[in-house]
Image (cartoon, rainbow, N blue to C red; front, side, top):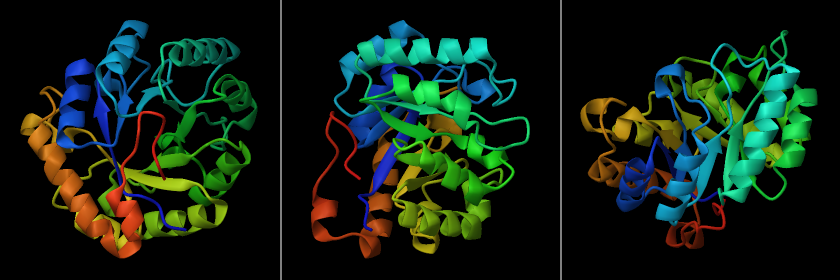
Length: 254
């Protein structure tokens, strides 16, 4: 199954989102508190970003950074955040939950999935600390409406996990769920990452920011360079129609 190349960029505010869109990003992952790995942004930020850009906006739904285990109260807060996010016009959510044994917490996620009807869903890097990447991917697929997983292949950075990412991508193809590579991805490393894994959805954060740091804004020129590298690297895996079309506000074309 062939999928369109997609460059997703992390944004923390409207200025970030606009710079990412200017550079040619296909999708925004909107978060707060990147120093804690990314938490749910405020409703005000969600509303403002959605009003400013035309590319899809996926919002992180993560109430705390202590772990990926969530209490009943946490899940209640997460479902409320999803409900409000939908009302504010976001295109999708980014979510994940694990049990104490490191397995995907299907029970907790089911209520979140029910609230997310009509939205795109990405399962985030909680998968990277699960007990088994392949078993986690199979479990995530049973939720039914998860479009993709964001993963570094279980390693600290995606470039360190070429073999694991390739295996996950191949499994994802059989399950019809996309695998998106993220963490430590650089513009210079996109060619190798794509060519050796077959993954054509790439997630970038500090790699497209001034001085390579979340302390500085997104550089649209770096986003443009990343997108060009992704398109070039993806050509062997794409057909001509996939390369000539782009995602719309209604959701990513994959």
